[in-house]
Length: 326
Image (cartoon, rainbow, N blue to C red; front, side, top):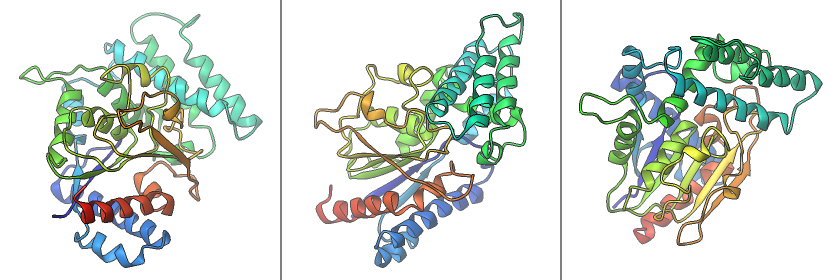
């Protein structure tokens, strides 16, 4: 039996049709195949692209954010105080991480100004004030070289709408008609993509790394390899204290965890979660590796997957799972 390979996407706009979701899945597969070739696994490329190597699933949940926004549950709604605070924390953690290793004096100046804009002390109060602060900071951050291109963000509003998905997930709100909150509905989607009995290799990106981590705590099947790309899991204020279950740790079924980050990836704050998480009963912790992409648009999953350091272990894990059943 083929092992299962599950891709878990991150922040972004909705994919409004099955064809669009299939196209995104195929783009991830092609990028993984490109990385596999570069890692010396040219003979496995056809097996990946033709679906022989694995039962490949794309765990899609982006439409759930769209439904919430249509009902007014958007981070651009000044009445959503908790989400606005979480969003400001997310930006603050990202700025702090970037300030720890700035690219130059101009970047330090911009980042320092944005950090001051996110500080509620001394700021005008009143309805929508926190949101205005966050939007102002986002607008400032877009002047950092490459950041506007990084996410395809044409404005601070678009940037906030995309990043707000992390805050909305962690706010644990937006119940549906049955009272099921947004974060649980998202995890349910991802859980349905996992093999309940056989081995599943999970490759997650951005917000998807948070979703996948929490989902795997609820999953009983073996996970020989868990891969996180451009992850915010190491953000000490915005993400780490809000993870469930607490204290944050490695899911028991995970046999190996590889975490990859790019220095120019604004979302990959706190790039070494192994310093912050508790190991599972097998003493598994994330192993973090820095990868560097050419160009300025480094956050998309396909940029990570095309790296041989990322693709090589995934292909090897699929081979091992096929050979052993685990």
